[in-house]
Image (cartoon, rainbow over all chains, first blue to last red; front, side, top):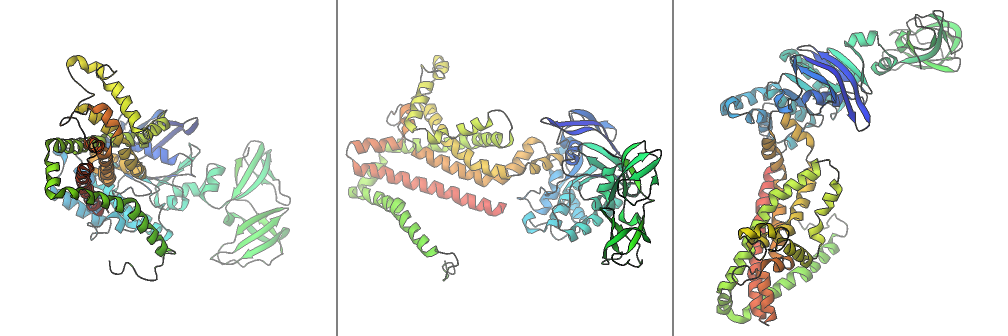
Length: 341
Length: 276
């Protein structure tokens, strides 16, 4: 089911947590909410589920306004970072919970519930473990039980709050691949909150970047990577080299000595030139000096000193490392410019 | 027992600690209780039985244990409610309310008894409201119940509160997103998690009510066979220098209390094992 948020505003005490957030997710889409802690992404997710109320703004699920609809009637599956499993119930009872609490008229029979639980246990790849208690499972298994429990109610939408945040790196990688695979099979609209950019970019169809209660940019992972809308997004999405400069008459002049002027279509004023380390070209002879060379990994990492500033450059795979202390020239032609201050 | 007392025990200083514990428990609990258990038999078995079978003693025991069980049973849902409001609620004056819960612990029982009696007597604020309908609160069964509920409430609140705090709100939230209505969340999610603590609270409130003396004698009216509690009867016998008779009653109370608390503990252990 599709999701739309219009002008969501929320205040905690005197500090605003969300300043008029607009966001959409199409039917069957996997949307990630990515941002540092305190950016309001979890609050936003809880609002979609009905666990939190907005001061103003509207939440629409499948086109229907959710104002006044309690969490239990929204039909969304919610998965918490720390699983929130019912410890006194077996895995099977946990998964069956959402079916058993239905009003008698809509409740499936015992046999139907048992069959559904068995299906879901198979789906989360732990068919043997229905009789275990949550305490007897590993973290990754617990989170898969939490997912199965959320899926049991045939939700209209799946909401995941840092679902892999409490797991170690190897389990995380496996589980997010599995989650993407599950999404491909079920086609369930999914919103996932995370602070891990690699996770968001790998799993989601589109990523919304949040900062201090505002949406900075919403785009596909490729779009975010290729054209970050703001300096914050540029910094958040990957490694960045930042060089302050001043724009006048369509030319950017760098504060660092020895860097050539570059054409720039920003209005006159202070600006920031940003590049990925691999987008910087390096050639021999020039005003800069090679100060460090690290050859570990597929590409050579070079530290270059221009004036007083150290700049990191990632050479293309296979390129010969320059000699330490040799003179060199930087090509910053790929720079993106953002207004500063 | 085999294997538990392996030497050398890895805990540093466990030997002396165990010795002191044993001596202390013996001195404070075991020896006085043994003396109590031995005292009545100077009457001989027939004397003990005759003393127990008098209608006044039977009525006092029935009242003490019946009213205490009822008071503890009332305190369980009420104490749970208070604990839940204090843990989950955010309202002005919460800290004050939290501190007020402890008052029955701290107040001398006689003071509580006098306060409750002035309130519930036929000419008191609350007693005056129902007196015109011919209902007696003080100097009757309801008064005894009020005093016992008052004394037991903090025990239930203080045993349930920490367990409720440990139960993450997320568990209740996830149940809501799965479609559970609030009563279902309470019965299926919250209660099973806190049932062992509730039982402990019940046992402690019950034990306190059985031993409660000071506040009850002010409000009960103390009519032999009707509103006379067992601890009072013990005091009366002591004042008449009937030490053996007092000890008979005390021993009966001790055994009844021990049995009931044992049963509560057993049930709790079974629950704890099931809840893991």
